[in-house]
Length: 209
Ligand code: PRP
Image (cartoon, rainbow, N blue to C red; front, side, top):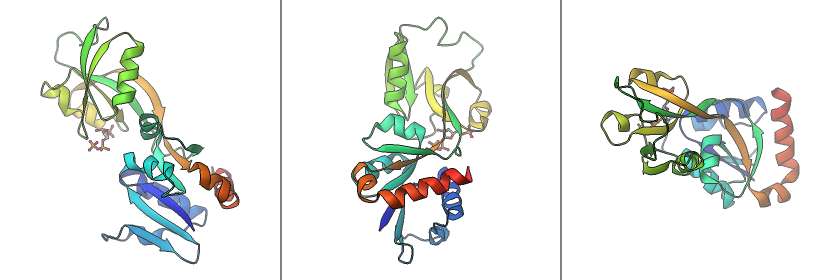
């Protein structure tokens, strides 16, 4: 049995479509239900959807042999696993942004300290540490763009895809930290024990690129 942990939300549908192209059938997952684990006995596969930030945890611990997660999550989580393939979908950017209020940018001349709201505390802390800025990191779990609008933080570190959330809330991008996309990740032991099936899947994915 080969077990896959997929990220709920934006990446889920694209992942299932891409897997279907390689012959992996996880179609049952697309039907609305509260079921959590989907087994395809004929193909000897099992799929489950997890919160994106939990996918690397399932894979590192071997509860899933493989997973699909955003590079943002992988950089933040720093788990012990193999990252084997870039799907090149789910493309977005990690950015630093602030609320435009007519006055000076809170990042003008890089001040010595800043309040930073983010879902990515390690990435944000590293970014400001490398620039010699003392950052008070405020961890949020969603709608990060709200923080500078209501005075919780001076700036945000977050991902942007279409740019519409930034634009519609009057935020300004100060810096683009890195481009991001969805990656295939593999448990280290599974890579050894299920080497043939896993490499066959990677080859199929590469052929379709
Ligand atoms: C992400 C991100 C931004 C938004 C950007 O949040 O944190 O808030 O998408 O997308 P855009 O550039 O296309 O407007 P997500 O929708 O995943 O959910 P969240 O706000 O609950 O974290």
